[in-house]
Image 1 (cartoon, one colour):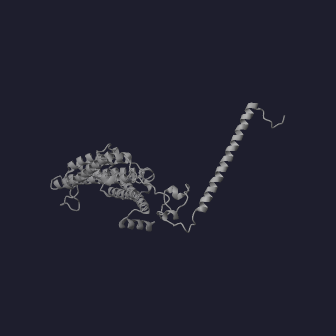
Image 2 (spheres, one colour):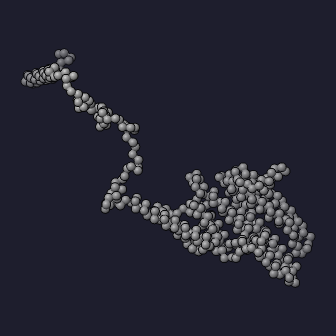
Length: 406
């Protein structure tokens, strides 16, 4: 038995059947070959019997007749070879933009009558109406403020804050509306009359706000600082870096306004009692009140300076030109207050030597504090100038004189 012999041997009947199948396949192949040869001979005969090409007239249909190649790019693109090629980006089609593509919901909404109202379309219409309503409220707000009708301005402001556009409330930081809120809170309880200025006593141009109005405005800025802190994500928007200067400005204005009001009351008392028999006693009382008023103003100014020093320790506030310049000016204000306390006349109730010594020590301490505050203010002003602050000419002269002394 050979190695290549099959394991299974067909029987006699199966062997005869396989032989017949192989013979039939050979006959079929032979017949197909003969048919192909006869077709070729017939085509050659037709070609020889046909007239020469010169005798056949060339028409448009026969001149450009080519066999169809289904893999030809022109055939695939459905473009005839006789027609000129389209311009670029042929054979590539242009990209479809969102404007060209219309959603099914928009197509259904465009029917007459519409079969479906798109939620996006309805929301856009509602948003446009609410936006128009917000614009009308803003116009009413500014009109009432120009007319001095602060009560109606507050109502318009409240309605504007409660207006939602696109499911979101109106942002008070847009278009400087955050400053309008502080102004309205200041004017809400401003019932005090105008106070005359020291330079022009006959003209009442300095308006006095109430303590409740100042407190409400400061609380308003404190809430804005907490609500919109300075973060890497919000550093391009209006944040606490913008609200802090406004807070300190209104705080400084509050302290100076209250001090000016107290001094005006002292001057009014002096004017009333100037012809009385107790004129000397009244002068001593007015001097004591003036010293107490200066000390109170100094304490409040120190509180502001401490708050600013805590803030200027950490970035990004330590490089803010506005905050640095404001802290420098607060330092000059403190220096003036300390110098005024040291130059104030001493109040000696008993005329004892101990009280005179204590008054001299207190004045010397105030002079040292004035020099220290002045040095700190110049340091902050230099930092503000280096940070790009717009320093006035008087401050520049002060800085140059200090540099020349050093």
